[in-house]
View (cartoon, rainbow, N blue to C red):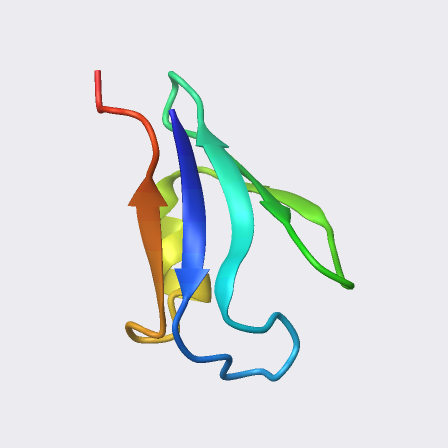
Length: 70
């Protein structure tokens, strides 16, 4: 299922605010994230909780699901 990472506050001063990344959660729970903007990279993690812990910045960024959980 697809998701976007919404950033309310740019702690690092690099990614900006608004939708800063798009991603996919695969059926095995792993996720792939494509960062948008000038410093665009693609990364992966074992699960969405890792993305939230590393990139959530204590609530400054949130994962918004675009597809229903099946």
